[in-house]
Amino acid sequence: MEKLACNSNMVEVLDIDSGFETALNALQKGGLVAVPTETVYGLAADATHANAVADIYKAKGRPSFNPLISHVSGLDMADHHAIIDDTSRQLIEIFWPGPLTLVLPLKESSNICADVTAGLGTVALRQPKGVMARLADELGSPIAAPSANSSGRISPTTAQHVMADLGGKLDVILDGGPCVVGVESTILRCMEDGVHILREGGITTEDLAAVVGTLIHPQVPEPKVQAPGMLLAHYAPSKPLRLNANAANKGEAFLCFGPGFTKDSSISRNLSPSGDLEEAARNLFAMLKELDESRASMIAATSIPTHGLGAAINDRLRRAAHGANGGRSTDE
Ligand code: TXA
Ligand code: MG
Image 1: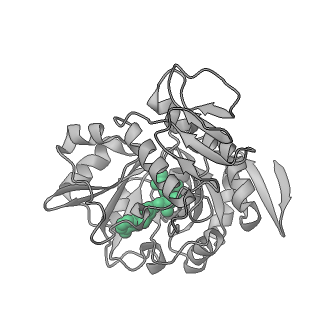
Image 2: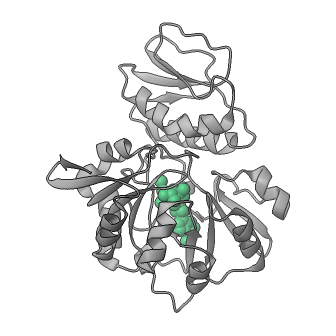
Image 3: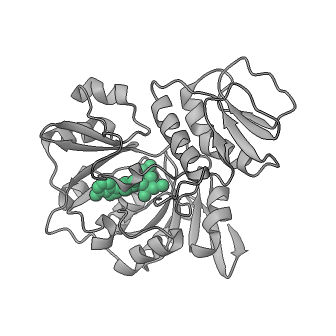
């Protein structure tokens, strides 16, 4: 066990196994706990505890109109809180536990706080792999958890990222090592006209289409924002980010992908030297952070293939570029 003083608060950084009970106790008392998932680290609180949920928004500096994902222990807990249509149920059976979030009508009987759903009448549910679902099971309630980063900044894929950004505002950080997927969950909403993809993420469009056929992508710009997370500017580094670069210019750090990039004098990171998109997704946020903290004045990124996890990677890079280039980040 490691106890670290951070700002005014003492935060405990604990292993996911030995720290499980401490994390559970903190959640039961309405505390904030950083919890690893297969996608990114979440900033977790009991979704039925109004003060705890208010503290999530405060800690992140997140606007209150942007609802949170509730993490459940499985289908039974999901059924308790949401009305699940046949297509969503089929997707749940195939992809849970895993990086798939479904936006569903909230049941009137649900005790999930209004702040979690931002009063939308729908709730975003997912059963992640690992310790978060076990915590929800023991707690007996869904766990509200956005990514554990300050609103608009790069999402955390290690306990150290969380510590550096939000450490002083948390009760416990559970350290489960680096996240294995590395980009957030895919968010879907099944409607009468088909399955809408609200955010690209860890489950690929190709895998989803194999189950439900063609997916409906949001029009750009969205006439009415369905998932505020779709807003253009976030995941933002503090340095300007230039996309589709062939090489770094003087003073730029270089984020590249695939073989054929030999090390030159620029500060560079290769998301996957072998051109593996899963490895690239795992490395994306950590490498973006490293380059953001380097002495370079700008970051240049090469183009990334658009298939498979490449869709989610490109989505995050586009939003990061928009946020870094002066777009006002209003989300996450
Ligand atoms: O992988 C993930 O999804 C991670 C881990 C921690 O589970 N969580 C995450 O949460 O990315 P967050 O808050 O950073 O993104 C949640 C997204 C936001 O874009 C939010 O607008 C959208 O989900 N969302 C939540 N509830 C919604 C609802 N009822 N309708 C539409 N969008 C919703
Ligand atoms: Mg986020």
